[in-house]
Image 1 (cartoon, rainbow, N blue to C red):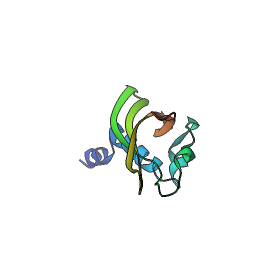
Image 2 (cartoon, one colour):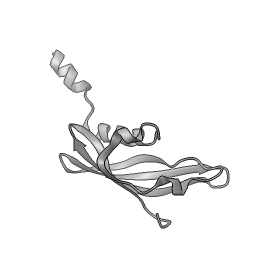
Image 3 (spheres, rainbow, N blue to C red):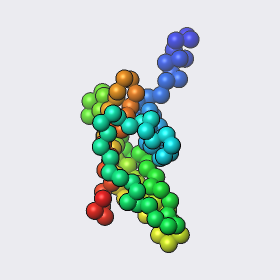
Image 4 (cartoon, rainbow, N blue to C red):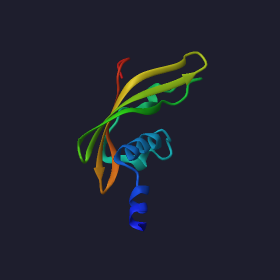
Length: 112
């Protein structure tokens, strides 16, 4: 019975992938969820006065293999002049050493 409870307490792969995206939103923690060979565009191109950083939220998760996940996400930024600006984003995550890590991230639209 104890083993059943311990197993039930472990997050599912979908929950673990969502947690990685949430952690990626924290600039101080971002490196902890990146794969060794991560391919990400520079996010500083979105920086500006009176705008927030870009925040990502997983919308849909598809497992390509047991160790590779494709995530459709929303990339949102907030500011006094822009209100809320949202763009689609995609992540590819792979399992490394038992932990999900971001391998590739792209933000669609606006030439990014």
